[in-house]
View 1 (cartoon, one colour):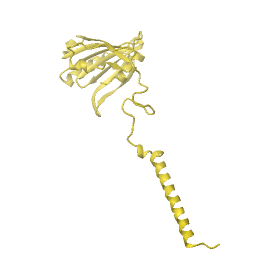
View 2 (view 1 turned 90 degrees about the vertical axis):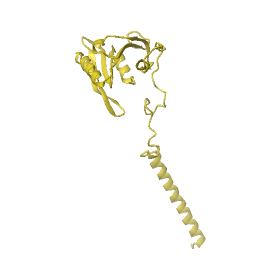
View 3 (view 1 turned 180 degrees about the vertical axis):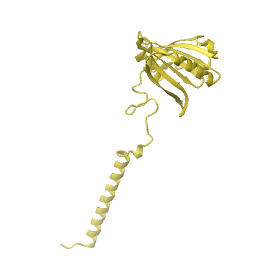
View 4 (view 1 turned 120 degrees about the vertical axis):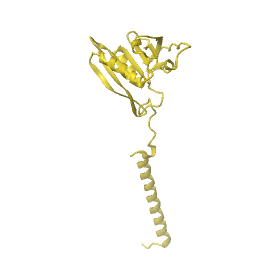
Length: 204
């Protein structure tokens, strides 16, 4: 069977179109299926996990946070109203670490509204990070229970302090965590499950 020049050209055009279509399909597959270079950088926002849309799946408090005093300092205002499903129910000045001469010191209580799940947060601020470090070292030296976790506190990629979490000596169901962030030292205590949920979500 003979072929005409026009039929040959037509077949070449069809072949070219099919080849181009195959290339487009391959490009789309490589871009959006593997290795995802077309969507690179669209990572979940902080506080979300893969597969969740932002704001979904986060625990929320079932009780309202109590307002701070009208004359609250900037440090006290920096304390979150809520942490995971905990809400602040109390915020009072304190003097427990007064011998170490902090410039500010407070005791806060965070609650889920359920009995036995409150977390007590004690914090103080010094003028120098070195003084805060000395207070942190003294507090952690006095923690005699089983160590559960420890490491460095980081902000902006730089280490700004350290943290230690331990069981309360003689009470394996309770735990406490102490951490330093620059000039501020925090000490949180509660049941082991409540404490870990609280301090891992704490933003400072």
